[in-house]
Structures are given as structure tokens and as C-alpha cells.
Length: 353
Ligand code: NAD
Image (cartoon, rainbow, N blue to C red; front, top):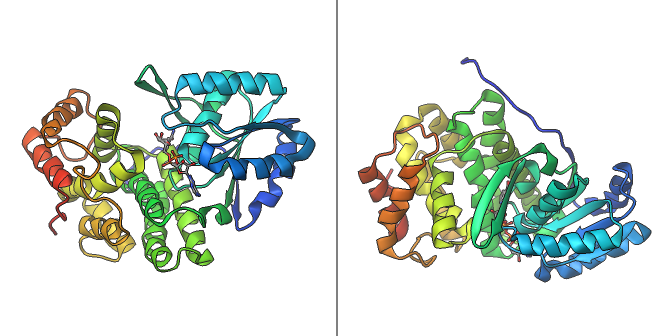
């Protein structure tokens, strides 16, 4: 075994169906006297239900969370937080809502209880991205790491079918890259392989029966493992491309991960023999990149950058930005090969075996 470094982040995780019943006790255990509940406009009803559940420990609801954590939204939420006398937050939603809770924690160091309802994985990371005047900056700090995560499978039953697949692929991407990132280590690889295996198998079952509680449980458990990979591991070409495409061309987060992952993996495949062995086991396929493409396609998710609205002539600019400030990658980045990779992702070609 090669020497390695493993960094674990502290987190209390409560997992299962109906686990929201533990919220009141968890808020109390953190010493939160009043919690401001956070969510997005479409999830306002779920936020209202948590306000009712918290009773006198609720500091009210802010339901204006938005994609990419815009600072003007955070300023608005901060004003509500201060007026309410809250000393903690409860975030219910996907990465956008969790991002707002992290932004408040960054400014106040308050404790956070998070109830994730998508598979994006922000709840397990020390990463916070914020957008000011259209410019996104990202930082890592333990200040934003949520103290308690309540994974309640029941919320994921309402994830629309296509979002289930794109969010699941977003999670899988974190684990795939943890297998071959510079920070790869045997402990994370265990979690990565099991996370991918659970998610890939569950997505097929959820597609056949969206209300299948066992399949939804496996998907959320897989998402947690994949989230640990993002929080404690590293990233490589796939995440770099997604950050470039999301940041420069405003492409949607989970959908971009879904389209790019099979192609980024195909780019690296020959340079990552051990990771490919794990991926063959996890996807139950000799051709993991093609298998992941098939998961997206059969789930009705987008499989091309063209469908996401990226103009074909933007490929050259995307490559230029990628090469200007590259992340670590196991295979050296070459402009011609990257062009072929992005061209295939743009057109929606199935990666070759
Ligand atoms: P999102 O949070 O923007 O959610 C998309 C929409 O789906 C929202 O309207 C949301 O309310 C709704 N939704 C969420 N769960 C639902 C459910 N169970 N049922 C019905 N509707 C539901 O999307 P996301 O993909 O979860 O998160 C993406 C954002 O998170 C991006 O801004 C990304 O940069 C960020 N992110 C950050 C990290 C990090 O570590 N900081 C990690 C992953 C993602």
C-alpha cells in the first residue's frame, strides 16, 4: 500500500426514513434557542412544516435561497436572522439552500442543522461558493461545515424523476474523482466504490418505481458516501470542466455534471487502472464510462452540452480557460484530446469502450 493522508471532517449524521422527528432534540443539543429555517421558494411548505415542528425554538422562515449563493440574498437572510434573535439555522433543501446556511455560518459562526433533499452533497463539505455581481468565489473553511445532518429519506420521494438522475450523477461524480484525485486514499476509495454502486443500482430501481422507499434509501445512503468523498477527497478534470462550463456559460449544475462525467472519465480511463477496477465493480460493467452515460440516457436526463444551451463555438474558450488554471489530473491535459472530449460531450456521443 502507498503512504497516504486522510482528512476526516466532524459531523453528526442521523439517517433513515422519518428522521425529521429528531429535529427538535438535535436543535436543543446544539444549544440553539431559536433557529431560522431556510429553504427555496418551491420548498416553502417543507420549511413551514419545520417552523411548526420547532414551535418556540423557531425563529421563523426565510424561503428566498437561490442558486450559487448570491450575496444580496445572503444580506437579506442575515437581516431576517438578526431580527429574529436566532442563534442557529436549519436548512432544508438542496445545495442552494445549504449554501445559504453556510453563508450565514460564515458570517456568524452559528451552528447549522441540515436536512438535505437532493444528492448534491454540500452538507459534508467545508466549501462555500458565493456570487457577487455575477462573479463566483469559492473558499474552504471549517466555519461553514454543518454540525448535524439529518438525512430523511421521505423528502427524496418528491425529487422529480429527471432531477433524481442528474442529482444522482452529480453525487457519483464526486466519488469517481475521489478514486483518482491527488488526495485519493484507501479509506475514501471504499466509500467511493460503495457510494457509486449504491447510487447506480438505486437509480434504475427509482426510475421503475419513484416511491420505492428501499431504493430511495439506497440512493440517499450512496449520496452521503459520495458527499464524504467530495468533503474529504479531491477533484480533477471532471470538476474543473464543470466549474468552467457552469461559471463561464452559466450551464445548470447537476445537468452539467451528468453530461460531462462519462466523457471526463473516458479521457482519464487509461491513466487510472486501479480506479477503473473499482468502477467496473461499482457499475457492474466492463465499460464504466459508457455505463454512466447509459444511466443518464435511460433516466431521461440530458446527455449533451448542446441540450444545455452551450454554443458549439464556445468549446475553444472552455479549453482555453481549463488550461489557464488546471486542477491536478492523472492524465496530462492536452488541448487536442480535450477538444475531442468536449466535442463528444457537446454532441452527446456515447463514450467508446
Ligand atoms: P438546488 O439546491 O438549486 O435545487 C434545485 C431545485 O430543486 C430547487 O428549486 C430546490 O428547491 C428543488 N429541490 C431540492 N430538493 C427537492 C426535492 N426533494 N423535491 C422537490 N424539489 C426539490 O440544486 P442542487 O443540485 O441540490 O445544488 C446545486 C447548488 O449547490 C449549486 O449552486 C452548487 O454549486 C452547490 N453545491 C455546493 C457544494 C459545496 O460543497 N459547497 C456541493 C455541491 C453543490
